[in-house]
Image (cartoon, rainbow, N blue to C red):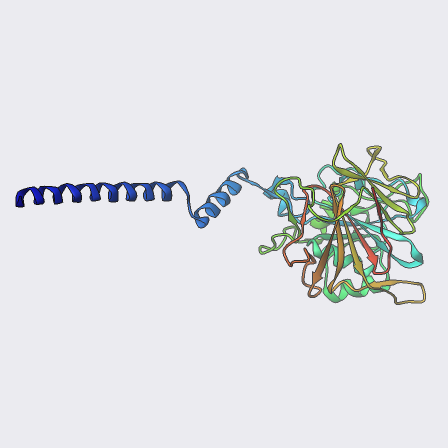
Length: 356
């Protein structure tokens, strides 16, 4: 009887060990097939990095893939004449970002930011600087290009010790030229080759700062915002009658002004943008000639419009040496879709019309 009890006990222990080993095996199998969040994050990061070929990067201005050589070069920010007599303009269809804001006399002036000017054969007409556009250029660590300046722009450039490409200079003919089929002051132009000659002439450092990683955030994939207001047609009450219409086929906004298509005469093509940023700021008249000042430091309201939807966001800039950033209402980075952008810097009381 005693031997039988011992045998029974041994069989029980063997069965118990079998269950234990099976359970451990299943536990190990579960762990091996479900990596930790940390491991998943590392894997995704490695995959994201691996998608970029050697020598390539995401553009700071558009989020598109560009060579590191191009992407780390300072862009050119060029003052563009935007009165009816100055139309049609040249080269602006190649700009990565196009700014529009109000200057004196209620007219608007544009600033076209070019990431790569190697293919720009003609750009203009180029006009004089206004001091707040210097802030726009510095936001993008760009070389500022202008033909003359207001007293406020001149003072700011001198105060900051900026090297800019200025038409009223001893090197004017190196960077600028006048056409004969337009009257002054609507006849000043430049080219990518001449702009490069200008930075060489002035010995301007052509690389963005080592720690600059861009101020815009971009989606990895083309995205329609989950929330927001339908914005297939956008009207901005500038004197230029700026309007943008969403094309669902191309996924971009076609631009109009002065009641007609806004066209780059060099290509004959209408301007198209993937993103529209409406930045609301305080404007103030600061001279008897009507020069405008904008409050660009601090924070304020903005609209980010893309793929037919407008989302309320905020903008923030701590100081002149800071870069303007865009945030969602929950404090996370606002994301743009990959592509070109149109930035309208408007007074806080502007009524932007958005319709289906």
